[in-house]
Amino acid sequence: MKIAVIAALAAFTVFSSAPIAAQEIPNNLPPITKDQSHLPHVVLMSMGGTIASRASDRLNITNYGGKGIPRVDPQDWVHDMPELANVARITTEDMRPPATRTDSSDLFEDLRRVAKRLNELAKDPGVDGIVVTHGTNTMAEFAYYMDLTVDTDKPIVFVGSQRPWTGISGDGPLNLYNAVRVAASPMAGGKGVLQCMNQNINTARDVTKASAYRVQTFRGVDVGAIGFADPDKVVFYREPTRKHTTQSAFAGMDYATLPPVEVFYAYTDAPGYLIDAAVEHGVKGIVVDGTGAGSPTASETEAIKRAQAKGVVVVITARVHGGRVQETPRRTEAQLVNGDNLPPEKARLLLQLALTKTNDWREVKKYFDEY
Image (tube, rainbow, N blue to C red):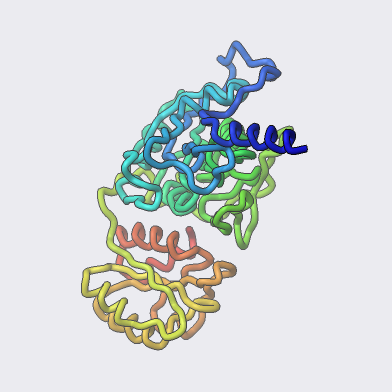
């Protein structure tokens, strides 16, 4: 009995300490298409994220990356997943921030350069669809900015993973495979920027990350998925109704900067002096993530009035992140823009873009009603 236990422990030690480089490619692959000339051309663009990360061992699915552990290059995905060759002709682009930065330090410059490149790729008649990998922390708002600023009807699909590429039961490979399938599908065109993970296809406008580590994290809180990447085929059941991509007033624009807008959270005794400080600092708009159906505190309300007196446009969202901020006589009288059902980080982006066109709160409201 003791010998068996020692042998088992030794085997586990060898297994857990062995370095894991990439996904194993089994020998029983399906036949790979040799003639790809008839397949759509999909550009696979990497913005990094967990899906582009390796860990020290297969059981490490939360503390990955770091010094001395190489990131996953776009070509590694193509190598590790030869099945992609049966779906599309893949070319890759590496648009990742420098390795010295983390996903939590996203900058507007990242939004700008990716939007600019996506607009360039969209004009290429040889490109049929684009897949963008991204970290899940800020994927939803990053994709929404592309939904507002990229001028194309071609499918653009954002994808990521909750577990590193080397993790046991990693969700990255299937997510990536399905995202390419969606981008290669003619049915995905004209629906704006999409996001596909865990087989669910959501619009960039509606999708929200709802869980820190679970693989079923992304969902459309109010409206649900518009389609699914099922094993047999990609299916869609409805169309987005809000303006996006080719319908957007901001499509195709290369914004070097955007008007400064800050977000404030409403909670018991939330003070208004933070709003005063932001106005003093020069913000042009603010978003208040209000309690319940979108209510600032009394102190925040007084600060909002002071801000509006200086020309600042104010948008109200609801911190419950479900249901619309509705139009009421009190909000209209207070000249507050209803953020509809957008979370504050997306409302901020739409407000920034709207402020490039107007600083009239009534006109800004029209953007929130239509987008």
